[in-house]
Length: 161
Image 1 (tube, rainbow, N blue to C red):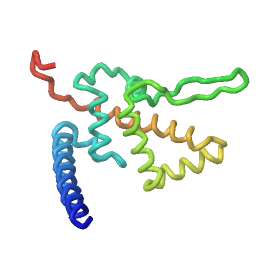
Image 2 (image 1 turned 60 degrees about the vertical axis):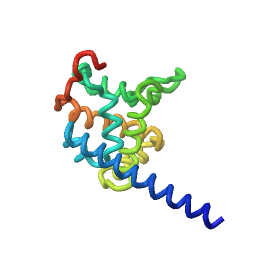
Image 3 (image 1 turned 45 degrees about the horizontal axis):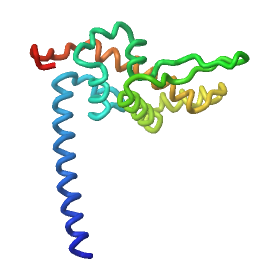
């Protein structure tokens, strides 16, 4: 039993070292491509990588922040019963980018006063937390779009893609 636990501890240490090395490499790559993206509140290396991958090498095809939000699955979709009008999140789009937006929103809800005040204000207006998070994801997508759009990414060599 003791030997098995020792082997597991060695394996965990080895995997943790690999994770740290990969995270460092991802951070260096993102800094080389778009260092300003990491300065946005709540955006870490994992989220930045997912959003840059979603935008792709030819991010100039994104003509507006609405198209980037749709690409990330953060654009609102009308869903009404006839008596009431509601919006829900788009079920399409890049799920990893959507998850990155969600992580950014959760970080802001926990640590940023402005976002916490927004949550309180919208809750007082009768919005559910799910609806508020949908609105915040759209806001974050709009903010991230400005950083992605302003930077030119390297083009792949011909015949490699």
